[in-house]
Length: 347
Image (cartoon, rainbow, N blue to C red; front, side, top):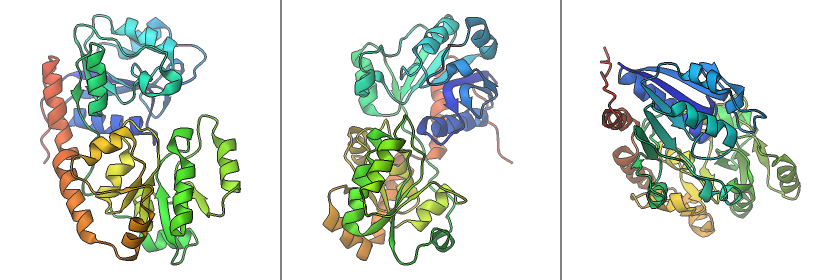
């Protein structure tokens, strides 16, 4: 049994980093390890506000060192990958000197135009690196860092939500419902989702909040459209949202992964997406999705769904993106860093 400390900008939220970090924490615990979470914001064991995105002051070196304590391994979730708090990253590197660390890279600065001028992650003896897509693995290698590929993992048998009750609560009858299960940011391309809904005659349900000052632009966008747009989960949960929908849309121009892509598969829903680079990488595993501009094909499918598409997609998800495979994979990575696991046996 080892003591692992997981550190990030924020944890416990609905963003992809928080969701995947929670899966990693559960996997580590199933391997017999004690896990402590440290973040600047959100639901965590130790909160250091200076780690948060946009914090005015970084945490002090003594405060961060105390938070890491006598950890056998520090797992860094994106804080050193994407320079959204450069000062905090600098203090973290100081605190990690001479420690074993595993960096979980969800995004990298050169993949975001406005961050491309800032430095990428560093490497040192005793540090390991994992990236969530092959593109990032290749780009890190070009910069002298060897990273292992571990795709985001998914429960391939998730709970089934309440379709009829959820649609009634939304005030829907027989209208088509398209769900966009993301936050609202410029790169999420809400305009693309609205255009698709206009073309297929559907209501759009935008689940996440606007962030990074996008609300005024979003309000203007919604005001210029005749498409009915519902916002926020309300009293529903994500499983209800998928169950109530007829189509999932992912119009993003960039995602480090894009969890709704696989969630559409595990919830047996058709997906329309913009072909951002990692979406192409995921699709190459053998999935069948619709492009955002394939309006005729999408409309035809909605009118006469081919259930075998869902079955074929789920076979691929079980093979290549299955949550049950995460703990063994992480156990092998920890072993390579000198951290032995003692899996907890379920009764």
